[in-house]
Image (cartoon, rainbow, N blue to C red; front, side, top):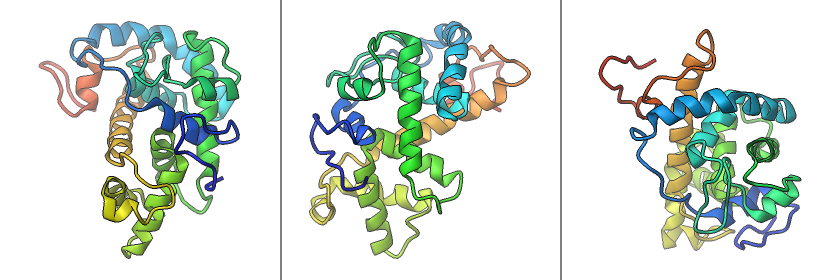
Length: 239
């Protein structure tokens, strides 16, 4: 699968794990997390059942899917990007079609499509890579494309580091934006800093969901995004 093309927006449907990442670019500008605190609580209560359905369809943790959805769209079912990605999980037209999604504005369809898509990406990660590195690399590939992740892993190994360690690979992904490095890469240039930030953000949101998703199921702190970023508002404690 690493040989699939991903430098074009119209990548073949056989490579959905790469086509969505390349086509969507950055998500649309959104309000600050603090401004969206109260809406996050409401949206989470309404959407949790859909994330759980997506988890059933994909075999992934529903909280991971919810964290990805929050990073992609802040759980906005009508979010769009400049490159045409749309919906809660920000699916491109090609990826939505490949995942069987007919209405990207439909939360249930979009979450299911994104969940199955992420599951496919995870299956592309070499099985020898242990958790949690495996999940963090899958998230990076979900964001930037599996081919670019493989280029970063090769670069990591060339520099004497561990290509199976996310901590090591995350140091070299940003170098794919530098000509002296991407000129040697099979898939060329990539905005490698974006998947690193993406993974960091999803991990932060996931930590909060794991903390609040148990005994307090259905509830979130007032400023979910602020806490996930590592800064608790007055009167609230970090997990």
